[in-house]
Amino acid sequence: MATDEQERQARDQLKAILALLSQIDPQSLDRRADLGTELSFEPGMPYFNRLLGLFRKLYQQDLSAIPHSTCASLYNLAQQQLTLFNQIKEFSHTKYPQNTINTRNSLISQIVSRDVCNFGGGHQELHLFLPPWL
Image (cartoon, rainbow, N blue to C red; front, side, top):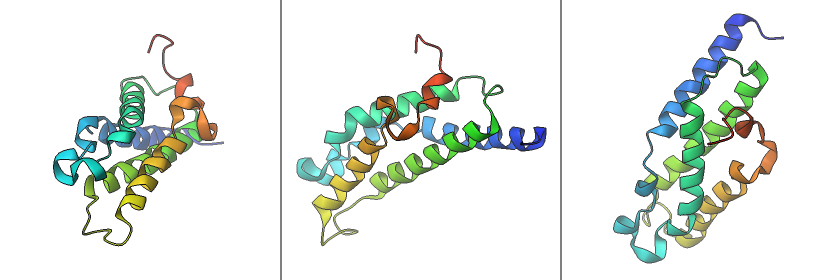
C-alpha cells in the first residue's frame, strides 16, 4: 500500500504529464505543410483529437481520489502517448529515409492501437475519472 507521500507524488507526476499533453495543439500534428499530402499525419487526426481531448479533460479534473496504482497506470499511458506525439512532431523524410511511409504509418498505428477512447489495452480507468457528460 502506498503512503500518503507516494500517492501525492504519483498524482503530481500525473498532473505534470497531463499538463504537457494538454499543451499539444492537435492540428500541429497534421504536418501537411511540412511533409506534404503523402506523408502528412492526416489519417491519424481523428484519433489524435479524441485522445488529446480526453487527456485535456482529465487534466482539468480533481485527481485527489485516484488511487496510487491507477495514477501510475495513467502516468505510464500518458508518457507513452507523449513520446509518440513527440516522434510525430520530429518526423521527417531525412530522419527516416529508408522507410518513411511505413514509419509514419507505424506511428499512427501505435496511437490507434492504444486509443483509450475505444477502451483498448485495459485503459478503461481513464474514463472512470471523467464526469459522464464529458
